[in-house]
Length: 269
Length: 269
Image 1 (tube, chains in turn red, orange):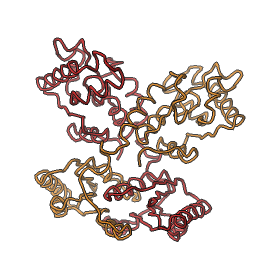
Image 2: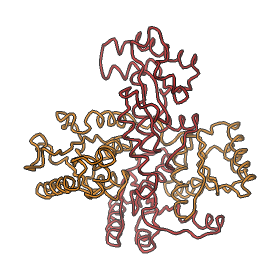
Image 3: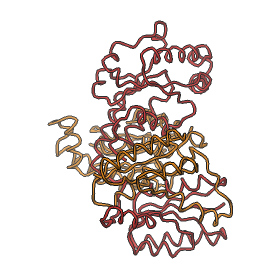
Image 4: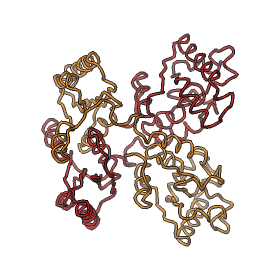
């Protein structure tokens, strides 16, 4: 199997995203290896040795995705027996020309604490945890968005992703069995109606997820899942709450769709 | 202010990471705008109009970072009045040549639920929540890593990031005041010693964070913070627990360092 290396003087997240976006276009398997924090010439030489060993033992040059801007470190990595892909190199010059200023490369540019948006994100994580699963309905005035939906429709991971990635304060409130008989918007949500975003899910998928947690229960029965989903979808339509069926979407996609529909302000890009 | 657009037929996360990595090299401010899920020719034409309006009103061509592989949509976006940067275009051909196979572009390639690692990540999020803050010490045998440290040293956001991004099950256990008098590893952690990773933080920064939560308390006093940090750092050294001072690091950096030291297997790249 061909090995792909993701290398950087920082977290290597950018290299991973860059390389993964490209390799996902190819219908084959890769052995992935990340080497982060290559900040010294010594570490660069060690990294080069690791790549060269893989090249030798596999008989194929590894693919090396990196984003080094430091010239000395870059030269060492570029001289390895792998094939080098570095998108910064290709794009810095045209952007410099377009903006009319020179790039000022420095290490740890992205994904570092020095971004002034960092505290927003940690505050938002604390907010999401304190306001998960309807635990703190008194706090909704501070929410940027309130996710609503039945149990296991994807509210909690989405709230956390909104917080961690974008510094957005997301509360979430679960509609429970008792709400279903006469499905109305709970009183305490009415003043915050503009912040509501509904999640829904296919009943079959909901059953599967719930069955994994509580097999053969009323909670995971086909009838209960169908009834709950029908009730909340009717409520969303009646109250004109924007909503999304999460069945086929990842947490990244659900988040991106919520941002797209609501126009919420990201505290980080 | 110059506007940067991040555009994609999917979440646009790749475009954001790509554009942000480049723009962070330039010492100037940008207006950021993401347009996700541009999946139809109609949406592509609307997007082009939005870009053209910004170009006209600002008198400067916006920078447009995109990753379209669909030719028809790409042609529409490429014909806008912005300056186009698309790294896929530059790298697909050389990688095809290197691998000896053709790329098979399809929409929603990355960040989608179809990756077989998705359930790992949701399971890991549920695990991190259920095992946050020492709430479930019976479950540690299922942990991939157990983060330990004093209150407010960064354990919870790091556990969640490990779970959401990499599908790694991270429990976390806080050392509290009562532990400090005779600082030893709690009995229930001893069988899991190889999974422990310690976090520490500068006492001054810890005071600032705690003061924001409980001003003028013993909890946030200089003496208490210094004492707790000294105790846990001594414990880490005595017990040879790998540890990291989180003061100057973001959750991405803390996570990348933990992965680098422990060699934990990522379930997603």
